Amino acid sequence: ETGVTQTPRHLVMGMTNKKSLKCEQHLGHNAMYWYKQSAKKPLELMFVYNFKEQTENNSVPSRFSPECPNSSHLFLHLHTLQPEDSALYLCASSQRQGAGANVLTFGAGSRLTVL
Amino acid sequence: KNQVEQSPQSLIILEGKNCTLQCNYTVSPFSNLRWYKQDTGRGPVSLTIMTFSENTKSNGRYTATLDADTKQSSLHITASQLSDSASYICVSFFSGNTPLVFGKGTRLSVIA
Image 1: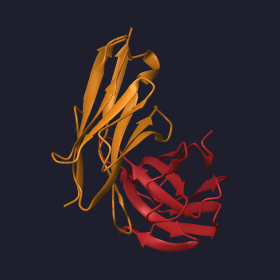
Image 2 (image 1 turned 60 degrees about the vertical axis):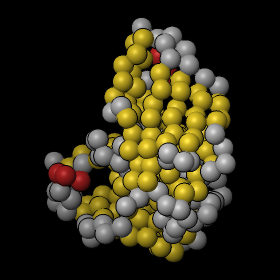
Image 3 (image 1 turned 90 degrees about the vertical axis):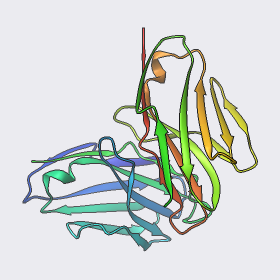
């Protein structure tokens, strides 16, 4: 247990479904991140929230919608996804964005399969 | 362009043997470099961090080196165990708003 909890661990959805991924951190961190991990590719940063404010959107399609209601919780809302969106989605947190961001703590990830 | 290149892409070794994983980075301005271990079905976990002024750092059977002149880092695993089977990801941090540059990882398999 790293202090960053992701649910669900596995998700299978059709292209017309709407689902959400949840991330919760118990570390008192102020920055939270969504990363996408596909086979044989580096981790791709999707979104960054610093003190509940979105500070990075790395050209992510609008079918991915993040939400950060407070510094401890982060959601990724999914709708009308494509099969190529199938991947491991990793949530991470750090003390804050920027100088403190090198100390990332990752969750176990949510394995998403889009049919 | 800021990049991190890792080699080999995959590696199979016998239990008890040593191995070395390589990481080359073209990140500027460079701040530090971290090695992560990612078990199958889990998130990455930090093994060690190397700053600009550090050449060698050990964490149990793991020893990381950094050569800031050639922009290379290595992770040496001594007396490998089956539990070392995982992906090892090199991550470079530089001064910037989104500072992390990830490598693709090296997939290590330790067999009996």
